[in-house]
Length: 133
Image (cartoon, rainbow, N blue to C red; front, side, top):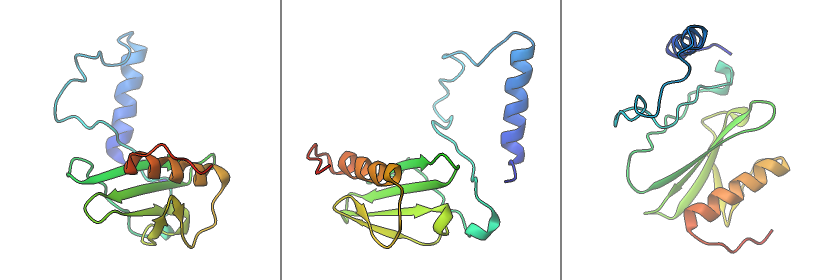
């Protein structure tokens, strides 16, 4: 895993703040309207393929993110217009798109935690509380 330069600089900045006693940025310092709400780097090697780029500010989609205990990452995407859901996972190759039907991903073996996460994303995107679990 290579650490992106921008992320490494951010870690250095945070470490220097802590060392100097300044701590984390205050709530007021974090209120920049254009600051990202959530940023995560890729934990997979180049063999996982091209990374999906998620721009969560676009309308009409629900996104979910998951990393298991091994650092394997996944992205859930639900499109409200088409009512279609899919999951992309680094360990299956980022370019593989696994359809999600009724809260279950097709064509991929998943851990119990991954199954539950996908189902939770499905419920959140669909706006329903009926579980089935």
